[in-house]
Structure formats: C-alpha cells, structure tokens
Image 1 (cartoon, rainbow, N blue to C red):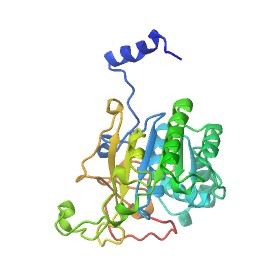
Image 2: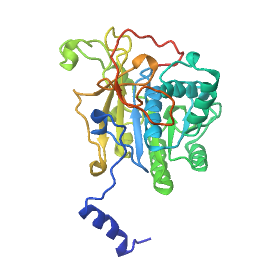
Image 3: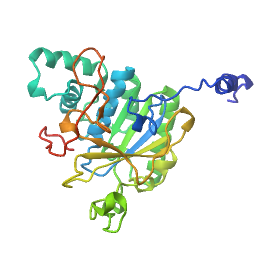
Image 4: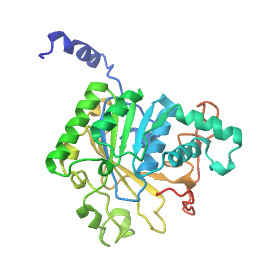
Length: 314
C-alpha cells in the first residue's frame, strides 16, 4: 500500500514546532542523557552470564512503572516468576521480604502485579508463541529473557527471521520489546590486560564488556534493532563486583532522546545491598516507602561490603 501524501504532515508540523515526543527517563540524569524508554521500540540487551541482566532490567522496568505507569509482560525462562516478584517487591519497598509485615506482603504484591505479568516459565515457547501471549496481555512492553532459551532454529537465517518478526511485532502492536541475549565465545574469552587504560589496569584478567557484533546472533542483532544496550559487571572483583556498568552501544533515534555512550565511560550503578540500584548515589525510587508512588529522592552512600544472600543469580 502506498501512503497518502497527507501521512507526513503531522510529523513535519510537529518537528517544526519542536513537539517531537521525547522518550521516557527515570530521573537519573546520567542515565537519561543516554537511554530513554520509547514506545514501539525494539531493544537488545547483551551481557555475559551471571552479570545480573534480568535483575537490573527488572529494576529499570519497575522505575519506569512507578514514574510512568508502564505495564510489562515478562518471559524469563531461567527464573521462577515468584522469585522475580519477590525481588520487585523488595526493590519497591527498599527492604528485604523477611522485614515486611503480612499486610505489606499482600499490598505490595498487588501493586507489583498491577504493573507486571509473567509468562509460565515451564513452557517451551517459540517467538510466535510469545508474541501472541504478549499481545493478548494488554501490556505496554515485553521482555524475552533470554533469546537462547526459546524454542528456535540455530542458523543465521533463523536469527534474521527472529529479528524480522520482532520488528513486525512492534510495528503492528506498538508494544516495546526487549530481548536479553548472551555473547558469543569470543567475547567470553576476551579479557583486559594489565596495560589497558580502563580503570587504570585494576581489572586485568577480567572479562571485557561485549560489543554489538559479539552477540550470539552476530552483527544482525545490532543492525536490526533500534537500541542496543550492554550490561557488564566484574564478577568476583574485590572492589567492583557489585558495580553494574551500562553502555548504550546504539540509539537509532537520537531526536527522541538518548545517544551512544563512551566505551571508556560507562554509566555505573551500585547494587545497594539488593534494595534497588543507585547511580552517583541517587536512588530514583527514593526511600522505598509504600505511598502509592509519591517517592522522595535521596542520596544513598555507596558500599562495597555487600553480599547477594537472596538466592538470585547476580
């Protein structure tokens, strides 16, 4: 179908008037300068195993829900949904579940489930299965976690077909789609040397953050997405093991906000004892007190003396 000549008028008028809608931020300036939630976008998130992709992205989604009422549908094939709901509840309240009152448990669970739906993790789904579930959910956005956990083909052509299907899905439904992917073996073997300038050589021998072309599907995963995000963490490092680094490798539409970040200057988040991430000491969920979303921003002291004792893979 050929588009009518009038199709372009509203965009051209809005652009001239400076009314192009910006993507949504989370009131963390250092992140909002580089990354924005955009309705209808296709997004790829890459990270090595055990760096905490699922946990960090759930926190990010929760902040978007609190601030903008975004509704999510999540398929996480490697995590029990009950465990993920608990983690979201702890992020929201800013304390461990064992410190909740009985009333808080049920009230907070209902609040979280007003924003998040979870697909049964026991199923073995194709992408088309998941897209049907996502569309029927009525949510604004969806997560496939991880790509390798689906019932899928393993050829180069299969990867392209998945990416084409993702694009068709987001264009047709205007849902936002995130897909978590693992890097290839080359990326897993790539480590910093003592002569690398990154962190003054303090991470020699630790794995480097993977790039776009190092995703398990190769360069097509970068070429066929709107935004491409890398998450990284130096697992086991005495100083940096609880620091999550985020890189925006690709932002297709910079007019609506965001831009690619520097390879040597990641956006750094502190794990904050598992109570929600902080960036430059800023906690966008404030003090975590349940008051229907009216949160106060505050500064949180960073600490390295933390342990992940909640059973989640981080």
